[in-house]
Image (cartoon, rainbow, N blue to C red; front, top):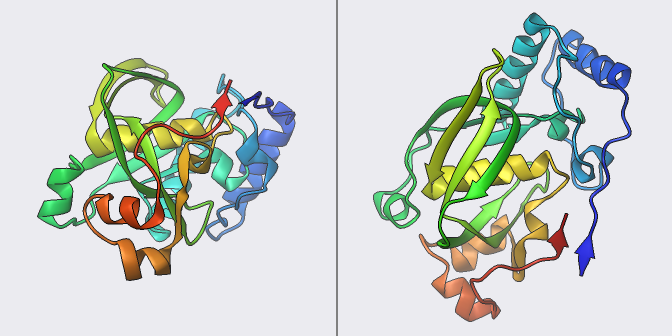
Length: 226
């Protein structure tokens, strides 16, 4: 089954109004949940809709929301803003065994604009992942274990950077958000677990116990998206 993801219908004026409303609120905005239209549309490319100062303030708010959640990434559509912007950062303490198996290394704060990723090689890694816009759930997703990310910085510079391991997973997850894709679109759905049931039955560095107990494989899954 192939599905075409629609492009956002939001105008520049609507995007700017959304940003201004968030910046004027005086409190952190909520993270929208699955079913919100901004999560299921391709976000508008950033082409100067916001002046530099406003963009920097929005990035600062997004970073605060990500830390408060807490999470390792946040895309603008998760605040209801259909704009090609995301923030990434991973400095959480992880058990050495899990960090080694998942190839998880710290990721310094990074804001990415208009990103695109391309798998490097054919290697895949399958692990549980969750999403701040699907509270309380997680599922196994097979993702490229190394990607090349092309993006713009908030200053407008074009960058190309390779990411591997857990950093590559974060990059793919957040970039997918900007294209109307949620991790459940790529997940092994038989692996889908509430956080509580995962903690009770399947919590480990890998996915072997869950794969045997829930009856899924660790290859790519989900619908084809374009």
